Image 1 (cartoon, one colour):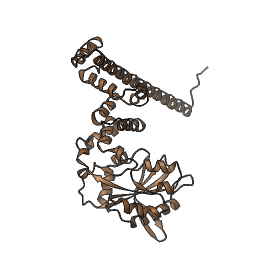
Image 2: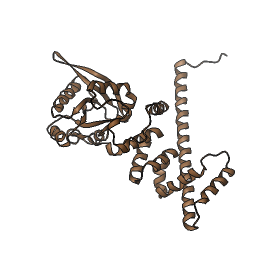
Image 3: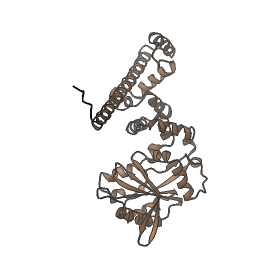
Image 4: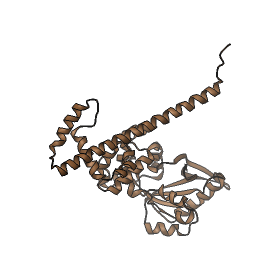
Length: 341
């Protein structure tokens, strides 16, 4: 009796399902291995701390431990004197093992080393560890976010979201904003025009999306809206996957002016009427300017009934000096994003 062959569509469905399960299993195994490794390093660091404190061991004990551990486990990496010192500092910085399990052990070991090297406040370390876990940042992206001061910029735009959007969408909308936006990947001068700024962002769209944050999907640039007998063009149009709404971005290579709000109100009304699906949430506007006066922006937004945020942008040459010390190159970011893709 001839053996029956599976229907091609059924076979492909099975194959795709098995491949998905295998990848998920590999990911779970990788996460588990990383967690156990980080916890092992924490416990080694804790034991070194305890012995040095209780037995008054000197610093040379780390060199001795490194030599003996390498001899005992020749196939394992990570027992260099430098890494043992990281373990000791790690345990000293994160004294509560339960917190280590919840946060630090969920990200790779060398991410934790970055947090130890570049940050001196535990609250800020926890913020970046949580963000790295949530967004799946590579190490170079984590370094970049720290050096551009993301924790200070995140959610800092001047907005009217609390008044114009229902909770919890208003909170989430606020969280996706930044002020200022760090366009450090652009090499434009301070006198750059809006079109040049837009073209630069489009030329480095992947880096621009990284700066905007997780959830932004690019829709179009210079998107045409036909209203009456006239055409109007939106600088940049995005869709936010978590907010489930369009995000209209208006770029201004000048200081913020109150009249920008009226223009954005018009864009949002047109987008909601012409593009918004019945299941979409109300569209959000984001005006990104060269500079802004906080008080003027707050006054301009006070009586607006559509959700709008106002932020500044910073180019590489105008970032504060302590932010630009060792930013990754454009090539580094491209490599990191390629690895994530």
